[in-house]
Image (cartoon, rainbow, N blue to C red):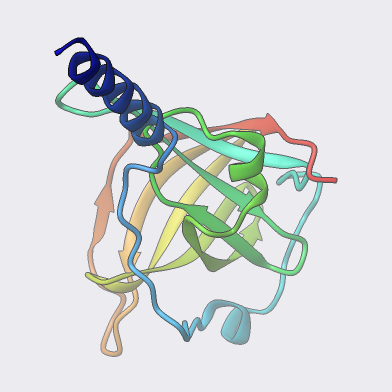
Length: 168
């Protein structure tokens, strides 16, 4: 009996540690993204406005009181890595990895970052962020449709704060 209780406790502890180290969100995968942003509007990257030596991190508390984390990692070639949600603060290894998320494209105009993203629904869309120092403040989404731009959807509570990460 003692052995069974001990085994159950050990199993629970091992399972719990594994659960908390895993990402929480499910990321859809698509092999060939067909982005238009850089093809149509051209590359416009400004290292004085967006930093490449770290990530822009969002910490969000959902309805059940659980904190989740997601981030944007901007690259110098106009690509951006958009992570899916993590149930705990991502480790250095997770910040370096490109496994839990997907790539998009971005462009900077004045103090606005325009990011082209993909999701199963609404498919391709643009997310607009206002640059405020080391913070990206979410402005709105706009769908990319063949026959028009789509409706803007607002979520003013989203804010991504810069976190320096040593990628080397």
